[in-house]
Length: 363
Image (cartoon, rainbow, N blue to C red; front, side, top):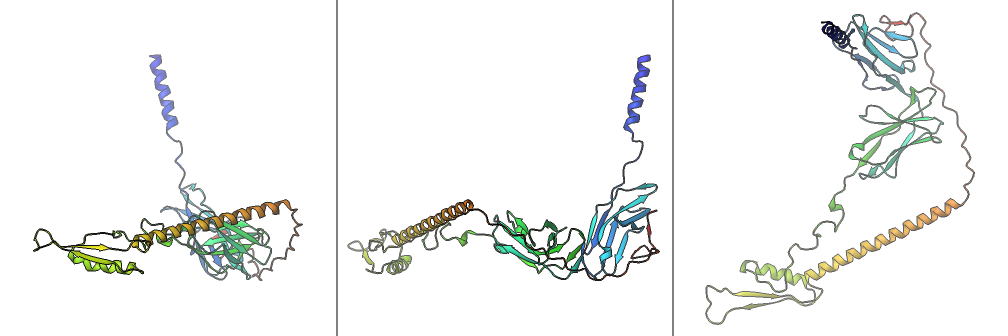
């Protein structure tokens, strides 16, 4: 009896541990900028926080500023430098707050009028599987660069390398095709970017066997069914075969001899036409073999020349490595261009809020 009571007590404790004492966490909301997070100056943008239906309260805040509002939507009619920064939001159901959303970086572009230049090395037209490097170059000593592809979720950032930054693509695919732009900015002001560079169109071309003659099973100039030297033809195709052989012979025309059985013709044995083409390299088969052999010799010669060039380049590189490197002079770093004149900050009463009545400060 005592053992049975202990079993019931243990079962009750186990069930109490399995039942959660508090309900689970609320799902975190999503935060997005419309039409995008890269906003040119003096253009409008909307920041929207999206949570489950029936939320009691939303809170949208700008990090490291103390500015927030208890509304899910922030509309900015004209982008200014003071609105650039990092945002996040959350919502409240009853007495519980949801986890914060992912951070949204709102960037103001066009702060610096001097735009960088974007180029592709070795070429903006590349084949699948090859390597291409997109290089962003600026005339000022910015220490940060960003590469943006139209339609991408976020730009790709890179540090400076003496006034430029390289963005390599090691294995190009068709998905890399598109329009690219790059920006330059300073790490001290990470949300104030320059004007975008001129667009660069990256084209990935697909290869086909027709681009390389001789790689298919049957070359274009080689007939699929070459005629033999002595062939029996039916009466309907006799004229076509004679014309083909006459064109293929440049020195001696072909001779056609019609052999009929002696005496009256028998219906069981029709007349035969024997076509004799001249022997030698002038026959169609001989010409095809000559062309095919010459093509192979040309390919072998080209391969040998390429191999000699590669060996010469390797020898030159090895010889240059033995020489002492010249002293590299660090380029003079030019100052960054001045920021444009901004409006005076709002008074402490409105807290620098764009919408006024729906915003507040942390207590």
